Image 1: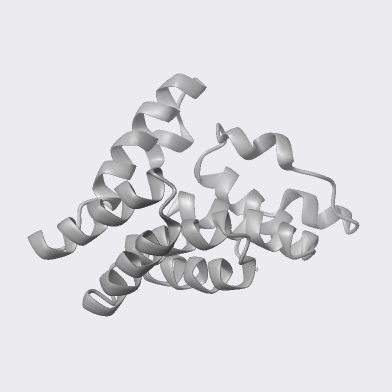
Image 2: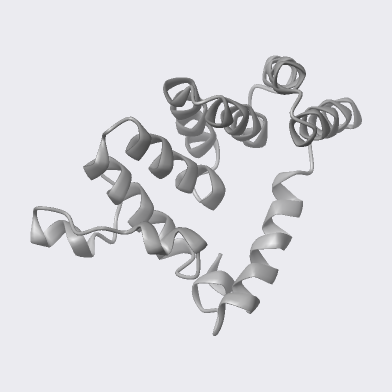
Length: 154
């Protein structure tokens, strides 16, 4: 994480972030890896029902694997089921507090649900971990001036 925070450019940060995604997408065992990959392939081919089924299976099989929740949230976000996505993103962050992708997902789901203040705080938290995130252009001022410089969790 420290390498991303200190990255001198967006390109360098992206390389470090890609390495993190590789770590996050390494499931606890071979069976879990097969389920994860099948679900990701189904999602990529817009078989959202199949992908959701795979990620349900993965979460049931490995309830402590944060990426299972994050991937299921991604499918629900695409389906515009932001409440379900937020629930899974919250669980992913609970399991892995520095999961930048899940934190950004939380921010975007909260904003879609009209919970802008919470979404903006989550987005700022993600930007502390990676100031080069493409979503940095989604930051908007908060009514309470002190909140605009938030450096910690809620």
